[in-house]
Image (tube, rainbow, N blue to C red; front, side, top):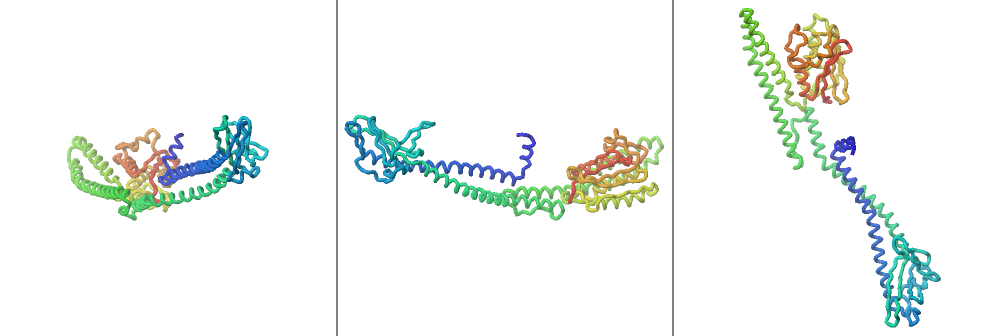
Length: 447
């Protein structure tokens, strides 16, 4: 089977798989019934007819006589009048080496034998016969007497044909009726999964804090585990954020004291102590940033409006960088929402906008587009010097600073990249058509 067909089959929904299996099974059963039932009925009717012919054969055997010369006579009339009606379709004949005796129904014809795949006999009107054939021996006659009784097969075939036409109508009604019942059964059976999907969407949008418990016993353990996992995850995130905040406050004061004390030493001692202190500050900033990017306390329900956050952040940066006279153009649609915590989105967009304000010559443009995967791309471009193509990949590495003359730790873009990854998003850097840097943040839409 080609790979694309295998992939298509793997992606089939449970409902589609069950319905497809039901269609295949029902189709096979209906075809088997449509073929086998008429065959069984035909064989039954042929068997019943042969049973009747056997009675006629006994009658003929009881009434048939042969003299010494082989001349045959029937001493009594047979019970079925069709033997006496010409071309009635019911015939008999008795044959010896010297004589042939036949029923009046054959009139001036005789039963003909034709050989094909199997030997068949045909009547007065060349109709195919259902027959019985036997050989009799009488005490007062030395030779064998061959007796054959046959009846027209066509009426049975006509009956089976009529039955077939009615049978296919019944089977078609049965097919669609059973298929409808199966589809209703599948719909009803999969309803708990549909309900779970709906509740997960509500959980993601913040309308619910956990899934309901009234599920069938096959699904209930999964629901219980999901609720426990969501609760545990939310508790861990909340605890991590508290620890990060506590650690930040605990280290901030002693580190500030160390920085101030270093300035009291001579220049050689300052050069010796300042780099380790700066390294400690860099490590604290990096790991606190990683703690913050662990996500929202309710990661499934987060959402943020990029347009609103860009407006709020740009108002602050317009004041900080007022001397540079940078114009920010926000083209983001106010209806767009992404599945990111507002605080984390501020952290990521703030880092990118701060870089843009630092390096832009006059204009920063913020706009969006929808990617091929359906994600929302938030694009921040500036008209600054940009980053050479051979150094763009290095810009997101931890601690890398492409310009040592500008203040910073070299952690901003790295933290933005890892925070975006924690939300199943990504940060992409490239050259802008405006001449500067083009930063693209891709996130899942929460709409």
